[in-house]
Image 1 (spheres, rainbow, N blue to C red):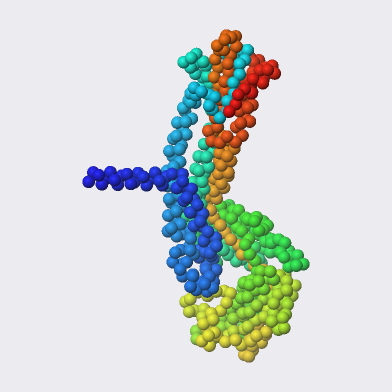
Image 2 (cartoon, helix red, strand yellow):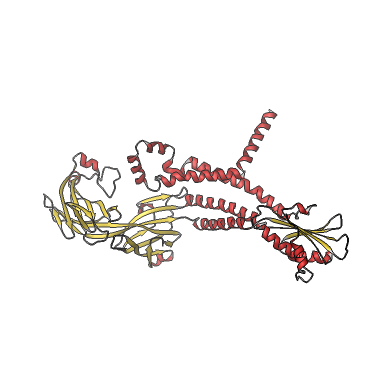
Amino acid sequence: MRSQLATALAFLRNTWRGLTSMRTALVLLFLLALAALPGALIPQRSLNPGEVDKYFREYPNLAPVLDKIGAFEVFGSVWFASIYVLLFISLIGCLLPRCWQHYKALRAEPVRTPRNLARMPHHAETTVDSSVDEVVAAAHRRLKGWRKVEREEDDGSRSISAERGFLREVGNLVFHFALIGLLIGVAGGKFYGYEGQVIVMADGSEFCNAGTYNYDSFRAGLRVDGTQLDPFCVRVNDYHTRYLPTGQAVDFRADLQYQSGDDLQNDAWRPYLLQVNHPLRTAGDRVYLTGNGYAPKFTVTFPNGQRRTQVVQWQPVDPTTMLSQGATKFDPPGVQDERQRRQNQIAVTGLFAPTANYSGTLLSSGFPDLLDPTVAVDVLRGDLGLDSGRGQSIFSVDQSMVANGRLKRVARQNLRVGQEVRLDDGTTVHFDGVQRWVNLQISHDPFEAWVLFFAITIVFGIGTSLIIKRRRVWVRVRRHPEDSARTVVEVGGLARTDQAGYGEEFTRLAADLLGTQDDGSPQSSAVAAGARGRKN
């Protein structure tokens, strides 16, 4: 029993040592980067479910396999979280002992001067016409800023041990702790952040961050239930896009007004020009301009003279020409009978071209701006399936209703602004004009500032660890055995990490230490030559 317990403890101890080694941390960091690749290359369900559905249609055999291993939810999968947690444990487990070791090294005195300095990678020796006390005092002045200690050796010599470059390890530790802080900040953003998308008409329409019901799509963090969002309102007054003659967009601008904080109580609005990469920051949230499009305006006049007007956004299918498709749906007014109402619903579907361009009779768009707005519409009448209990896209009709004959096409025609099409029962569909809409992304990340801070700290930490070098220098001073008025000075140097650049520094340092008088002036040329001494 005792041997089994010892074996188990030894296994746990070895496992912990292996997990908390720096090599394991580097391997886990590499695995984390590798595991994140599918999240960048494969559409994620939490970000764009439409692209995931498209992936299933295009790769019907591969997509189910990827779905089983969590490739469409990479950052929420068990295996990604396992790597994430193991990396945390490994980094913390290997950093804490290093901090203790570095603390002890900072408090420890520099190591004693080696007996044979000539064996050091850098070495110089000469004889000067100064006393031992004068040389030692000059050496202390030259080594100002170094951690140093003076000792008296058994043979009567005096030596100075000096070290420098402890900030290298500090920078290394700061880098790794900042990396941990960055990972915590990213994880905190996933826990307590949220992100939503909403389409707002650019005609003075408003959006208020009062609840998830105001969003077209909403992705909440693990600790966000959507009931305590930061309150603010945005009003989109207008939208402008400038195009080159080639049709390439130059800039996108939305004229906004917003209110948050006390402005909500005072009903005060503040202006803001929203542009790409220039988000509105208010109430702890960021509002981005991520898209735009067109919303055709239709008026349906029913046989009894009643009218219904609707403006519904249509979805761009070609971003270069802004050719769009969509569906605007109408219920017949004043019909109390449920069955009759369902049989007479109307949908105006088709294509919208901001600048009409025809290939035969097929409508397309030749330019993204509103130079000749035209719609090619199919007017459908019947049961739209709005009361079926299933969700429907606002950009299309339920094709199953068309397939089973409950929704039929009753007209097809191209319309310019001001034109209309008349149905067989006297109903008219009038194309009134076009309005612009913008797609806004609202992002909330309470750890955003911390992520930025730790990212900057990582750069400074790794820069410090790369620039600063750990090095040691020893100075041994003894009276000349044949001439008591003269002093033998010996200098040795060692780079603790790498020797790149230390040779030049040691040469300058040795020249100062070996060729300095009491007043700090250089020795004669003969002494200066001796200061360069014998080096290995």
